[in-house]
Image (cartoon, rainbow, N blue to C red; front, top):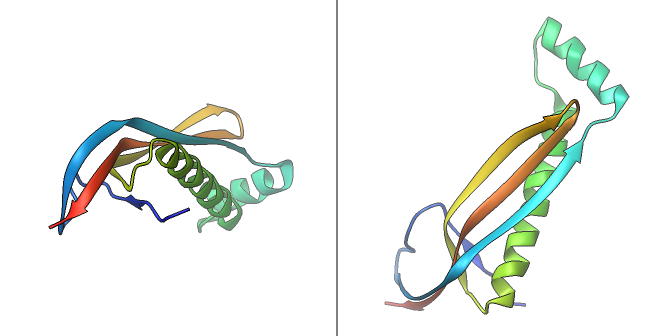
Amino acid sequence: MSDITITTTDSLEGHTVTEYLGVVSGEAIIGANVVSDIAANIRDVVGGRSGSYEKKVEAGRKEAINDITAAAHELDADAIVGATFDYEEMGEGMLWVNLSGTAVKTRSE
């Protein structure tokens, strides 16, 4: 599998978009366990960052990137432009991570 460039911009420097293939997305639903919930609540009270939650969110982002890349490969794209992450709380301890963008074909200028 070749690499697919993912960018939040509408274009790629040094490349021209030759074909728009459609919207693609990747998503992950992540949850936290009771131990990390308790630790996070303590950090909220005394201050500081919740390393366990940060790791879970990062894992969710990586899963969403893997999913969107697979979707773009199915369309024979070489890039995804206009990519945006969205995060939504789905209930206590559950977080939905979504990454969407437009799969495109490009050529070097």
